[in-house]
Each structure stands twice: as C-alpha cells, then as structure tokens.
Length: 541
Image 1 (tube, rainbow, N blue to C red):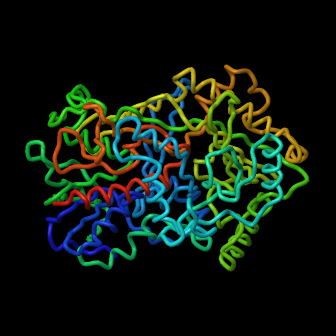
Image 2: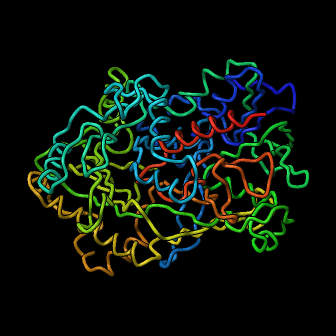
Image 3: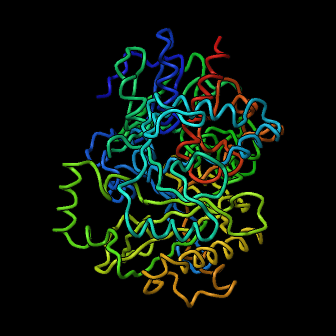
C-alpha cells in the first residue's frame, strides 16, 4: 500500500510508474542516502487480472487502468484511440508482454548519430542484468535478473505449421527470438513468470517499496513542472478526487510518462515549440522546437483466416463455459493459451528481398474473433477454427506529432499519427501484406486455410492495400520519439537524457528513442532506464 508522504521534499522526483519509472525508483533508492518519490497518475496494480497474461483483453481499454489518446480523424472519418497504461507498472501492466529486444545495429546507430555511449554493447549489458531467461544465461541472455522471460508454450499444431511454412520461405526456426539478428521464426518470448505477468512493477517496485527512502504516490497526476528560471525544482500535481500538491526535488525531476504524456507535460510547463505554446495559452519558459514532434508508430495489417483440419485456440474460448473451463485449467497449471500474451508466434524477416536486414515483424496466434480491431479489448471468439496474423513493417519513416491545445490537464491534446505518409512506408506495407499471404499460402500451413476473412481477397491492388492500411490498419502500440535524443541543439534531450535548456530535468522513457528499435518498446525501455540509472548515479553530486 502507498504510504502518505511525510514530506514534500525529495532528492529525486520520478513522474510515471511505468517501465522506466519503476526501474529508476528501484535503482536510485538502493542508496539509502537518496530520498526518492515516484508519482503515478493511475491506481494500484493489485487486481488479480493484472497477473493473468490474457487479462490484457479486459484491462487494455478499461479507463480504470488505461488512458486513451484520440487521433485526429482519418481520411474515412474514423478516429482511433491509442491506449497507454495508467496504473502502477504503466503499460507493462496492461500490454501484450512481447519481449523483443530489437536489432543490434539499430542501437549502434544511436552512437553513430552522435549520442556518445549509446550502443548495442551497453544495451546488451543492461538486458543481461535485467533478464532471468527460461533458457538460461549466455553471451546474449541474462540468467539472474528480476524480469523472468519465458517462451510461449506448449507447442501447438497450427503454430508449428506456420513455422514450417516460414522455413520453406527461407526463414528458419529459432528457439530464442532474441538470439540473433537474422531472419527467424520463434515462439514468442514474454516477460512472464510461471505463466503470470512480470510487469516492471512486479519485478522492480514491489520489493523496493519496503525501503523507507522510497515513497510511491498513486492517483496523482503531474500537471506541470515547477521552474525557477530554467531550473526545474519540482512538480505540481492534481490528485484524483480533488486537490493539488507540489513536490520539490533537491536534485532532479525525472519524467517517465512515456511517448504520449512526457511531451505534453513539458509543453504544459512552458518547454516546447513557442508557436505551439503560445497558441495553447502557455508562457514560453524554455524554447524546444522538437518537443512533441517525430512521433513514430508501426502501422501494419491484421489478417484473419478461417481454418479447417486443425484445432487452434478457438475451441477453448468460443463460449462462456469453454472459456471458464480453459481458465480453470490455467489456474491449476499456469499453462496453455492464457499463460502467454496476445500472440503465440513471432517472425522477423524480409518482406522486401532487397532489404539489407529483416524489415518486417509478424505476430501470429491460432485464434480468430469477430472484433475487427484486436486492440479493442473485446474478445468475441469465432465458433470455427481460425487465426490472426499481424504484419508490421518495423522501420516506419512517417512522422506524426502530439501537442497540447490548452494549458490544463483537461485540454484534449492533438495527436496526428500521420501513418503511411511517406512513399517508402506505403510500398513497404504493400510488400509486407504480399509476403504474409505468400507465407500463409505455403504448405504445410496452406492446407488448413479455408479463406482469408480480413482484409479479404478483394484488397489486392497496391492502392487498395495502402488505403486499407491507412483507414483499417493496426497500430502496434509502440509509439515513441516525441522527446528524441540527439546531438543537435534543437533535439529535446542530450546523451545524458537531460532536457536541453534546463537544469535538473531529464526524460527517461520511449519518447527519447529516435526511431523504432526493430519492434516492441517493452524491453528496450527497461534497458534504457537501467542505463539512465547508471548515468544519473555517476553524475550524482
């Protein structure tokens, strides 16, 4: 349970108890001389549903645990809601738990771009310290960290058939999806422990909360940073249910709100593009033109298939009695379809043969639903066997933006994802869908396919695929880049994650990533926070 703060003054004030905030709170409070406050806008993660991997279907869009950010209208008029965790543990408490670390040369690209010290060797060291992998420690895996990593299982017939079809397309099977950077298909690695979710909170915060020098406050949302000139001295917060409180940081404020909330907090505090701030009625304190820019997110296509001759998961969840029986078996064994996240298999491969490295990630599970969008939270399982296959080009070049429209928390921000706005992204999506169909049409998986339910064979020409991807595609829940790190004076943070133009302020979360790290943000953000803690402790005065 959260303790009532006995003081409002701390050495470090951390905003956001997600993937990064939990690790920072743990690492900074290891030194009992540091007083640390962790602020979370949401509530506790004590619901048993948070332990159940498949529980994210029920929590991802529940306003008790998530906040959704509405996009501007798409060309066909619809608006999408992009959810992020608003609960202790942040999005690690409600996400699909895929533990995909990304492509090593991507991280070396950070250093090559002028960010000294940010490279694959450093990230790998962090990953190995974080992980407690089911396959054991190795040169590329950790074996004694706080985050358990398990491989989805048991093996399943439709999944094995798809993996075999990938092999016939030159994409080999790998037991460890993070074991190399070549094309590969694997059963998904997830941050789970004995079939239960291992969130950042469970791994790093629960044990640390016993420390007297760490205070955690929930239901407390950061409204704006407190500045003395250009030095950030604290955070002014609004409490759920009414009232405000201001916390003071003797050393630093560490913003860990994620790619959505972090840039908005900076802008509400007067740190951002002067034109955006003035239009929103906010006094400019520190000009920083790229805050809220460079929003990048995967945009792919979900394919659904009707199958025959193979069981899949539909039979286990196509009615309330069946789902309850499956749930009971899970409670007794901590295994089966409920024991891993949203998907059972992932493959990382080339959709474009000319690519120098894998360019597409797919997620596959032998289940189909009548809900069009798998991120809707509604799991209405079809009676007949089926499968989902999400094809996501890994390196989008399209850039969107996220900005405040007014000075307060209740002013709805403007999110322009700008999906598929470059010709490169449009053509890559076409190639990704065609490659997915090619794999599915390959034996042995092909013999089980009755029909493609979504998007359907009527979506065939390039322009039809592009239009479908824009208006009906899948966002990967991997938004980042809105406070990107870089050596340029206009980049938001420097290589120490300090916000340029300020003192006493850093941003530590996925918003500082320059580009997509080859897939999911879950693992890379935790590693980022581990590295950030090293930097902060080294620079501590």
